[in-house]
Every structure is written in C-alpha cells, then in structure tokens.
Length: 79
Image 1 (cartoon, rainbow, N blue to C red):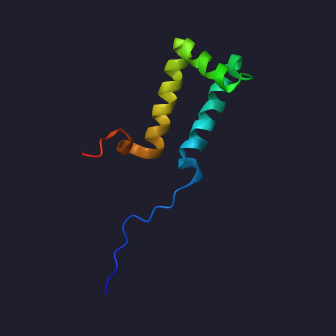
Image 2 (image 1 turned 180 degrees about the horizontal axis):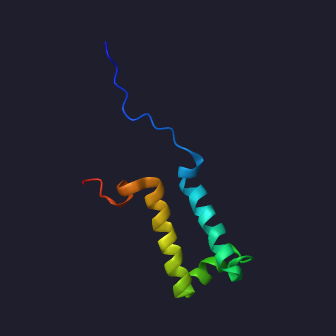
C-alpha cells in the first residue's frame, strides 16, 4: 500500500498574519519617527490622514502578503 503525502508544509511564525503585521508596524515607526510613540488609535489616524504614509503602508502590506502567501493571496477561491 502506497501512501501519498500532499505538500507537508509546516507553518512558521513568519507566516503568521499577526507577526507580519506587527513587524510592518515596527518598520513604519522606524521610517516615520512621528509615528513612534502614538497610541493604537492615534497611529491609525496618523496613517489614514497622511496620503504618503497610507500608500507606503498599503504597498508594504501587499508585498508581505505576496512574500508569504504568493499568488494564492490574490486569487478567488473559485479560481
């Protein structure tokens, strides 16, 4: 009897969304010192209100999604 194992993938901490999101926030705070000591609510407001920061934040999120999820992150389940 032959047993076929399909894609034995062991997830890593780096693939975890929460980990990636926290790392992204750290990166944004380094790049934009004015964000460094803001509360969660103030940080969200600061990102939303500054178009350049908001665009960079979105770009970095998409890059990370692609890096750790590949094309699958951008496909419908029906594809």
